[in-house]
Length: 283
Length: 250
Image (cartoon, rainbow over all chains, first blue to last red; front, side):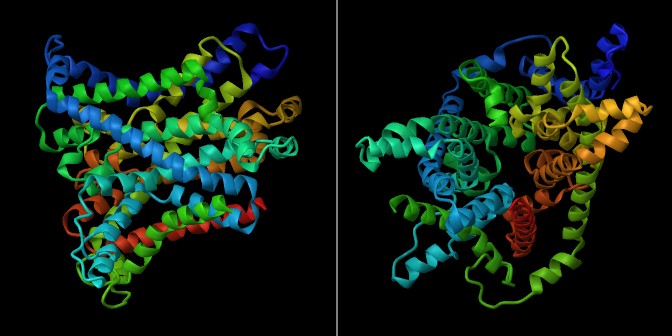
């Protein structure tokens, strides 16, 4: 606190921030940096140094398929969240009113409800004693297998990540000046043109932020694919989880973790280069 | 009009699962049939009396409180350092503080599994609390930094001119003015810990099992309707907080 005194000695002023930063730096070093570096270390072999783990990972068709599936699933979930989330964010930001407020409340509540609770809900809905199966039976049809499929896992992830997308879109849309759309209409544009040429481009930063967040969370998703998906929907997080649970191959687990971390950090780095990470966190 | 219809439909998609879970919580049998055959409070009674549910609930509360306290204690000074001073390495330190937000939970689960295994913190309340404290740091840092942005530093100057030391200034001036930010940050940290599933799943073990871990195991193995009760209670808690927050904002 002495730093704000104009007459504070320069040395004290230089040391003051570091005194305040020491607790967080030490804590993060001991509980974050060291454990993470150990994983990186382990990925290069339990003794000595070898890249055999990575060579094995990138030459194994099974692992490459899982990595490809992880990226593809994240992309699909991101697109679905965008398509479903845009209308809600648009209505809440532009129209407000009773409908807007109720929708915002619903989205906020969903956002704060744990992943696990929402995954469980889908387990019930899609289960063979759930409402959808009951509907099929009422029509005299055999209910299809919904649970433990790609469909179940995808719908669960979309439901869980949708609020992230909506929040990201909404926070940008709130700052769009409604007069710009009105101006486009006054100047002869149809409502659709005004939307497509004025509103949509202005909402683009929200689209990027939302897509970035959803994609990244989806890449590392464990709970939902594990509980709702089938064996054919394994994503990389699930392979890592299986290694921990069954105590199989530590180096392999560490290698997969480093690959997942690497892809994630690379995406953050690209975002930072293009837009600056501050926008993602403060948006 | 089209946008409104779509928005309402998606709104229903978002809320419907929660309604289903609430109805489920009144079912009694050991199956996930919807709608349940009969409506009873039996599963609620089971939740509040079965130690297999009460112990993890208690563990989660304890872990939430400890981890929130640790996070607030180490992050508050850092947020003040960033608000008060310019210093070398600012961007690097900020990046390090934000890192736990970027690392996927499953990667941290693996990291803590090794690390806590070595230092004897695996399957302990302390271990889970430390892990949760670590991953909450970025959230708390962002919230406090946002709060500090609008803080009037002349108040601090005035208190120091009046002879208060740094600690007194913090306690008597900064803390009361910034109380809302501190409350929100602590609430976020607590909820973050209370909801956290992936890390707790792998490092809490039987001995320190958290509520989400218990729910996860339950869903995977036996599908007991008590899960629906816990889900309903958690959801009602969230609904209450969200409603209060929205009413106060208006």
